[in-house]
Image (cartoon, rainbow, N blue to C red; front, top):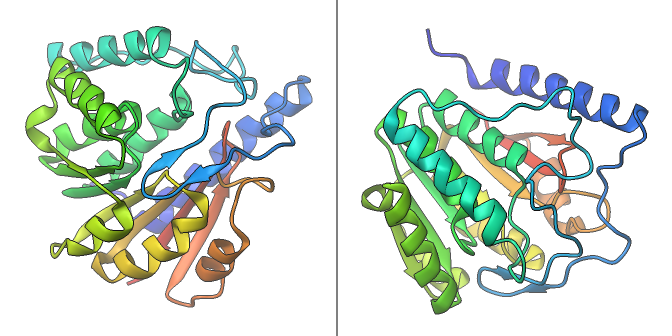
Length: 257
């Protein structure tokens, strides 16, 4: 039986809020540093304020988290590549999503039966591969945008190694210019690029997001979120949003039926 999107988001919000509360009570902190990460237009972010090579981040509780278990050989291959990326490709890169955030993206893609995911801000492809884990089950595909040709090349190599390259289309260029060329429906729109550009991406791509589809925004915390984006999603009666207290913060917005 397929879970209703509204029901799933409610359960998800309660679960993550409970996890975050337990982490904070144990003395951990999941809020980013005081200085915001500077955004760069068209699909890139500035350098990370800290590392986190284990992929868990300071907000994670070791008593609650567990390593993902691959059901098939194909899934085990993907997880092995993600583990290698966590260990060897974090330093010197724009901040990837953390492991638990990646797992959450996979859950959202798979549970909603997504057929087409659009990602703004590929970087080395870490979050892309997590989304692809969900799309392998739904038979879906992903279109991702990256302004840096070198990062795009590295992401393509990671996609091939993970065995997901056939379901991913990488578009190199300014996403503000390239993404609006899309014509087909979007089930999930994932924003993880220049924060000041989120409003523009939303205005240009929301018409393509299907009813019941999701807009997921990374870096949704008090220090990094663009107030204009928050106003845009919170004042639109066609949208319903929840904010999850993950390592960097995620905003999950439903386009209502």
